[in-house]
Image (cartoon, rainbow, N blue to C red):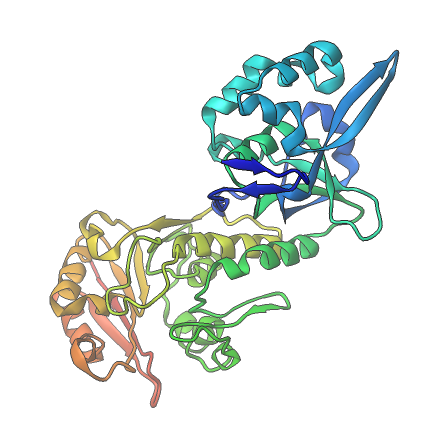
Amino acid sequence: MLKILKNKKMVIINPKKYSVNHKNFKFNIKFPENLKYLKTKKYIIKKINLKNLYANIVIDKNKNKVKHKKTKIIDTPHFKYISGDKKPYLNYLQKYKESVGYKIEHSIESFDKLIEKNNYYLKKEYSSNYIICQKIKKIFTTKYIILDGVHRASLLLHQGIIDDIPMVLIIEDNSLKKQLDQYLNDYQNDFLEWYTPIKINDLIIHEQTYPNFKKRPEFFINKERGKSKWDFIIKKNLPNLKNKSVCDIGCNVGLYSIYMSEMGAKKVDGYDRSKKIVQPTNKNLPSQNVVQQAYFVKNLFFLAKNKELKNIDFFEKDISLLNFSTLKYDLLFSSCVLYHFGEKKFEEFIKKISNNIPEIFLQTNLGHKTGELAKTVNVSFQKKILQKYGYQVKIDAPENYNYPIIFGKKYL
């Protein structure tokens, strides 16, 4: 996979992009035993390119003095071991022993276990096992020295992954605001479409959608997207959510799931598409993991407010195949989603929902004026279906506004 040129430059054949899981993304880390001295230091989670990382490799030991050399990952005994040349690493351990690591961390057995797990970096039980580094103190440099994680860096590099890798960077000062800026800057552009504009503190992500994906600041205040829509028509039409469970169908970036949690909902589950699922009425939309986008936004809110939203979860689902009969919540919330599946499917959804969910909140989009969608977005059509399956319905349809609310409630 790797090709080394004479000038020591590294070429990756078939390079892989590191896939970040925002659901498991951690901002609070526990330093390993050998780095306890860093507990008083400030740090930030930041994307760093492996080509800019160096390892402190022991090259000499004399009494209590240990001499190190800053070494590219590809030239370390660790990387050579993974590549099949095991002798340098075995000699390294034998010659310098405890000088090269902490207790059993640098052993053949532990390294072999990591290699067996292959792409384990920041996955599940390893979700907070970041490579820890600090910037090399030189003028005009972007190089970093690894304090912990040479084995992990070697494994990633051997897999052909060099870019977009989150790591812990020790810095002089830090704050949640600084981490928020860094996290937003690192990952915002991973998502081409932002159907819902977001404002967090003084940071704004503007709406950008098909076909040209240009930022459209007007949607931040026009009552058709995001918080402006929430404030204008959604929040006031929602029932009391205190201690209720909520199902958010088509949660998109998760903004309304977060707002409903802040209103007192005890549990909010959001459902939306992954990269493999195509939006049924617009196949030109980008292939995008919307659920990962929702977790990204959830993390942004955590950094802004220093409050974990543990009662919110998001699930990758093809809504057209979702078994609505199994959904058991106090409220089903769905903004501009269910009508996309046609009259027959819409009624089928409502029929199944009515068996287990006593309250249903729908928002429609009257901007669809032709074709099949013109029928299913109709307020009278949706009201008729809700009433057919036992809901008493309230409508809020402001004049000249395309996004009316249909709220249904069953009275037992």
